[in-house]
Image (cartoon, rainbow, N blue to C red; front, side, top):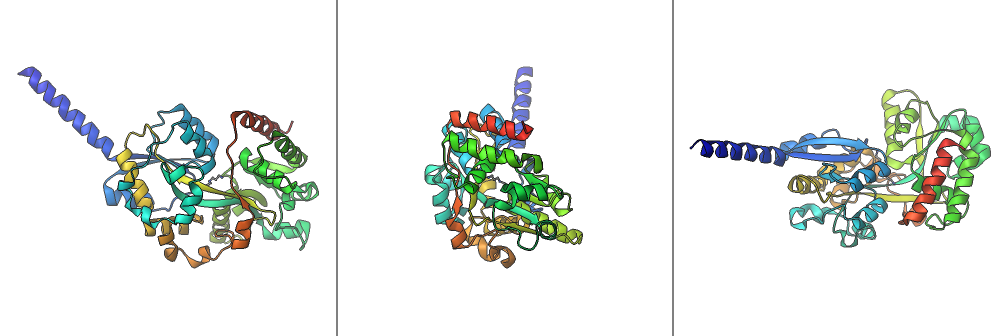
Length: 362
Ligand code: SPD
């Protein structure tokens, strides 16, 4: 009899634990990348509580994913990183029956993303953007004059300009697979090259301007641009617009602009995915479907200034955003965008070595 009671108590506790787990979702996303009320609305709609952690580097996310047992249900790798993570078996195929809002997605953009995930089997586009230059318009004009080459990578990659701008602060992303191809592109080399010799040349250019770089970091520049601590940042489109909005809110007189350089820039997609060992894949699907709701995606774009691939959301996005060529590039600018290509482990090691040299400056 006693045994029966114990068994019943154990079963009840286990059921309670299971249902507690059913009601929790663990999300790992980029910093500054969601609207203020998205999670609250998701919990109100589903009863699922969200634990939300952030990162600002694909390398950090990749290390966690490859180690396994991250405990996350939804993570947001960039397409090129995701491609090799899929190959490593890190993500589970999505159950499309649980994702009716897929109907809202732009088929052309999803087809582009399918380059990295054939058939979009494991992923849905969250947001997309470009890697270009954010700058303090007044400071740059004060230092380089009215004809400063603000539409060109020469603004930063020409050592003569970098030397002059160093006094007001230049920053770069701590993202080797973005910075080295941008330098290669400026040198007239193919930014999609997988030839180590091209990376060596890109690294040589970055070493020339290294003394003029204040720091390499992938999120700190948002506030630093906004408050005038730095004046030029190679950064991600939406983040530069967030800096612009923060300066405007602070009414500090600082004007920040974002440019996709005329030579071209990297276009990337950040992808919603579910790790193969996610504790709560049902909640993960519910979250991804919720994000694909037209109003929810529009709210996110309106808050973080990144383009999205949700066609149904676009009429709900502020016109100020849909008409900004820094966020939704013109067809002519699109022609000059490039996408990341996967690198084998040998090139990866070369890139890591070159980047360490650049970061340490020696
Ligand atoms: N604050 C959000 C930043 C999102 C950047 N995504 C990474 C793109 C890498 N190419």
